[in-house]
Image 1 (spheres, rainbow, N blue to C red):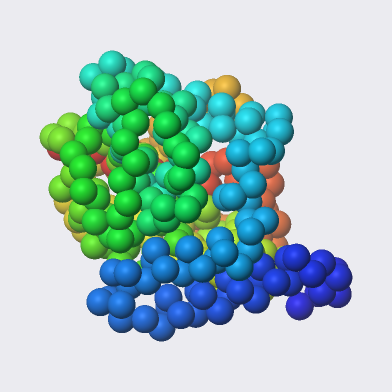
Image 2 (cartoon, rainbow, N blue to C red):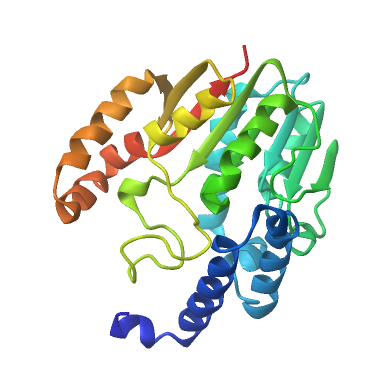
Length: 273
């Protein structure tokens, strides 16, 4: 650990609590994880009351700007007939923005604590075990979720996402790239994620998982400032391959260059045909 890290008691406490709880998840059985996801997150929020998920609602303009950028990203996918479901909705701030623009909006999360108080027209909060998707939707969205799943559960959740989508429905998944990480509490301390990011992915790895559960069409999504588009997945995975050939420290620096990072970020749109 760095001396700078040790000088910050709050971060030290957060780090120690999260690493311990994450190890409990990593070493658990599939049956145990059916209740453990909810349990460890509730314990984290009790032990770390200043956790960003709990204080986000009181934060200022920068946080609001990030939220509005996400909403602008989703806006072209929304219409009055859309049934929207957000997995890992957290404080439900984004789902509450989306809800008035769609027929129905579901905010799905494992924690009753972090979703408490969420309210908007057409909004329903749904508590889940972290794997099941107990709704039917035309658009499912997740942001910073896949990395929190135990690797053994990722395919099961994706199969449930596929089953929850109407034919022609889309799953829009944003998760931090392994190449630019780690992105959890261990960033700047460890070389790989050790906290609640149980696995960070590259585009190729996650796209392969999508296809394994039945998604035949998977595209990469890129947003740079106010411009957004889809790209053939092969373009992004080719860049990942090139960066992967570099020595780790150089590859990390290159992949974190602003424009390249926007392209390498894992943002996939999978369509149920």
